[in-house]
Image 1: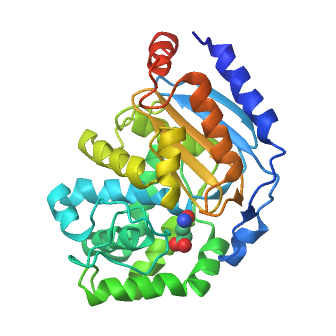
Image 2 (image 1 turned 90 degrees about the horizontal axis):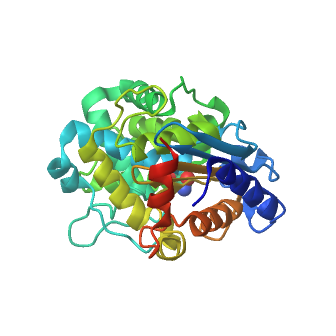
Length: 322
Ligand code: GLN
């Protein structure tokens, strides 16, 4: 059974094992993202009981990008309820890239809230309720989950806004099928801004530990998400969180998670741990290469896979992390 200092040791060992892994390339389709330092690598783990284990560049800020998607999905679930949300966003893996310009052929809904079409639709639902103030509500919710006041990186925001024509194509397709209201420009600006919220590994681990802790931030003790929303957020993260590489991720890592093109990944071990990694070089699917390797090793060493036959993760964590 692992002891506290053994987890810290393991986190450092994972860093040492993979900090020279050079696979992949920094995203450049949003020009500002290409400026990230490819050498950065951070790993943060926070238990649902409030213990931190961290190593590397865990204070380095980066934009949340697609990792905003499950959080905004949680917000619309809380506001509109599951039934209303499912009328506009399904929960099926698409098997396509995150930015594919495609809706379900029978229903014209986006496949799920983890691809851009589904995420833009979720932002559109928020817009229906809060209009241009939606971004303030998003910032407020993300800040509660992270336990500190988060800000938008205006340079990344402008960079994506001036080049995000593919997302414009997706949004107009959504408008054509009445999936978003006729405020395409405004909704996209909110979507670009939500993707440009700055976090570091420490924040991301706190956000994931808040989800692991059934919606209550383990540091501030504030309830951020409802239990019902958490269940649906985690389900879709498990089936769709790593883009079209989710099947392999679930097979090898077995933790509900979400990645972003900035190079972050956060994973949630239900009721036990929030885990976050950051390293900007991405693999073919758009997931951080070092992040995937780190999660794989952490999951294996601590027995965190949901179907690990030893279930040693639950064992050691429930006794250790009180
Ligand atoms: N803002 C990015 C986009 O819409 C988010 C994508 C991602 O992180 N996969 O293209």
